[in-house]
Image 1 (spheres, rainbow, N blue to C red):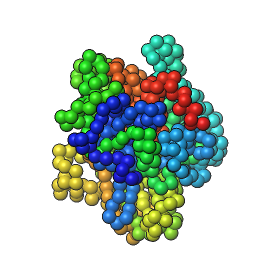
Image 2: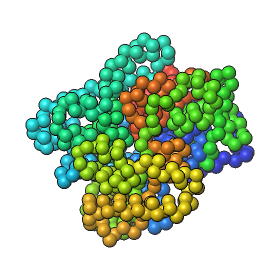
Image 3: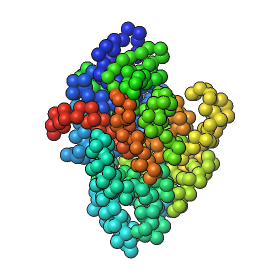
Length: 528
């Protein structure tokens, strides 16, 4: 990314005539910013981190390695897909995609291996080959996925409705969707089969939305499964190209992005947004769009009076899961080690709910692992990083396991915390060597992150990575919409729609629709 396309806030920066301020430079914020800038609006993005991009950014270390922090694969970006058109629109057609191949996920349960193949019919055939006596259950499951998503698409579009439509047509849309969203993943799948291994295989990708089958909404499960059903893709050049190309495009239309700029308050007067405060500096605007999560927005940037006005309460819903991530650098290419492009999911046994919900800091690295190979997925990596490869291994991470260290500063949390991380690294490497013994002797760099790391960089208060948990209750919360009851305050990000880059980007588009109204048609025409 060129330094000229984002900058630090200075006292002489001129913000006169700003239409829209976006808080947070994750892909949801960058999406709405780009749509508005392309519509001729004056847009400014403020990011508290020293690197823009949210969970799409990457970080580097001295030995020449870099790793993504949140984008491990993306679905539905094949030629002609609707999501690819949306990416092309905000990046000015600058992002290219590499397919992960015919198999995008491989699931290990105990001593058995199951492949997820790209294409609905390939997936159907593969599942039936593993479970020939369960063809009826598998066919019904795929049909339920399809039907749930049909209503899910309408449910998300309803979020752009004004109150009169929401109270009429919107009610019907929500009732149809709630038939699926108010059941758990386990309820739906176990109603189709009592085969524990098949249930485990169908639920094995639950880490993509961060909640075990008996607590997750089937609608969330269905959207994530369908998102990858036609295969997985990775942005050529690395995950951070999503943010860099979008920021390049945004600034070409006059938008501005400021880093190291933590917003302290959204200023509201008589139920109307006036602007924001950064330190003691007031910056006026017509509207504020928050991309930092509903908890951070309502509980940390608004007064209690304004929270009440928005009917905001999280009493019945929890934040999503945290995670522990091991970043690994190797002194040899992924090709030489025959490392795969596909992701690997490992579960010690069939009971996924027990593995996730009963995890302890000791058991988590032994019982569950998600492994990604970003260097193998990126066809440009070998040219820019010869004779090197990268791996990321993830397991369950509870914030409470590390809470005693939360007051200590990043990178200076003391000997006890460092020793705890070293033990976690040891156990996670042990599991990695079991799954891929060929990497042993080639690991030359490691780094481990905990939910405290996530909290430090995102300000998510419990180190969560997916915002609010994707439980049935999430889809009944009335305030999870782009527009709030405060005039001029809008919300974007995965809390408003669904987990992941695609969900966050969709939320940005929905927010743009509520602002531009019929004027958005011109932009839709430009997408074709």
